Image 1 (cartoon, helix red, strand yellow):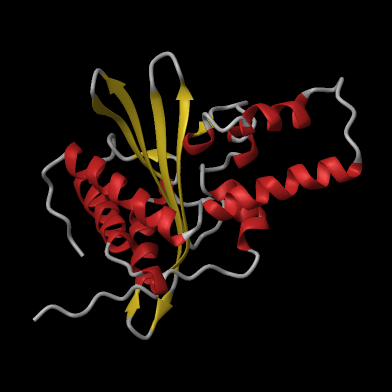
Image 2: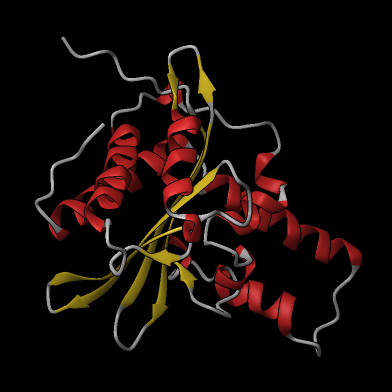
Length: 221
């Protein structure tokens, strides 16, 4: 009989899908989470073993973070996988890529099967630098809010990207301290949305589909 899955070994899970090239329809689908050990499981200890065997995959934002990324290209009505990364490093050129892929698939599958009450977010996590730079690995999320590096997908037609660009990058626009405060608060709020359980859960289903479509390797726990 299978042991019940422990969902408490994950916290501060975030998800983002960003559009990085309008012309070729290229995207980055990212998930970041913090792993912990608890009485039900040793998620962090298992992760440390993965990193010990693959030191190039160490997360430079936080040793307890694991960042998963799937780069895609839209071709016609379909999606083609370009690359799969863990902590910013492609796993496709690693000799043990199948075991790494299975590990990533298992993590995403866990998130897919989590209930809303199982999601744990530290208080004020959305305003922390680790949240702002950990989700799109080692990049400032603001660069995807103002369009500098790409666009968070759900902001594309909202008009907010243009407003962020105006207030953050146009030196000819006068901005009071109150204006800047409101812009930064809006950025923090969007980071909060990217860590909302409902949003993350929906994103995990999409990421799981991408991973399944990439290979037929079985998911190992």
